[in-house]
Image 1 (cartoon, rainbow, N blue to C red):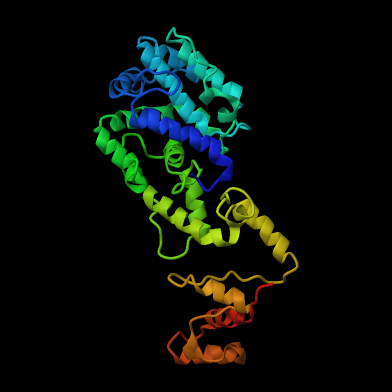
Image 2: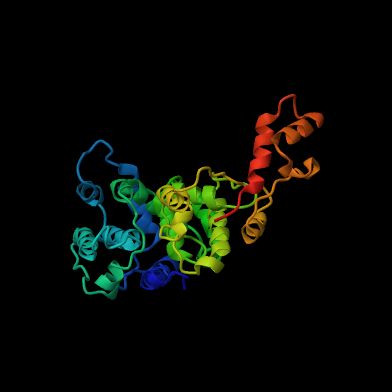
Length: 348
């Protein structure tokens, strides 16, 4: 189970979906077989190949027209897809009743009774979301559902044994998912990976957010941010490095960890810490030297890799002359200035 204590109900529900639907090809709310290749193939024809790009109608209004010619099973399956899609959404972003009423509306198009009293439709489950997904998760949901349909069609085209093996290998599954149609820039890609593999993937639904975390917190060799799996691996490495200090249950989007990377939080932290400072110097240990940070903080110093220059306390002119004699230009005053100042920097 996930390290996130507030996600236990959410992830227990996701596990039930994984077993009943992704592995067994069954159904969430009844005993029918809804999650099948044939049903997703039908949804591809009805929805993916029939997008109403020119219409200004609301999403469900268009969806009703698109699914209209389809079978009852296709409509019930879409209602269950909505359950999965909205599962991760915090109740502050969408109330349990709103989630349930949307599913009930789509299910009703099948002409069958909506199982509103099912345990997976209870408020305790529908309010268990842990992500503030943002407006785009709803306003661009047509793109997310297109990806949802095509990825599930690809999934149920695999042999059962292959599906079971993929679900036992988080990184292999992620690589497979990223190779499916319409996966590029999809928020549901991130949501799906967290729901299935919460110990490896974060409850973060934007690649931009993950890239920003890497920009501020990654140490070591550069990460190819165009490779989504590499980004997720780097985020997991950052988490493991921060856990001894912040505990296993921390969230990247909540203080105190958010203060380490979110621009607004970083600026607030900076003002609080250095508001009375005349000068503040930005220090970087350089690529491949991440362990220097702990040594600097422990001793209250900063160091630079110019051992051949000697004692930096002897003054800027002396260092400038020394640099000139070593072939660093006739007037390396800027370099001499920056080589002197950091040695006197200490943490507060």
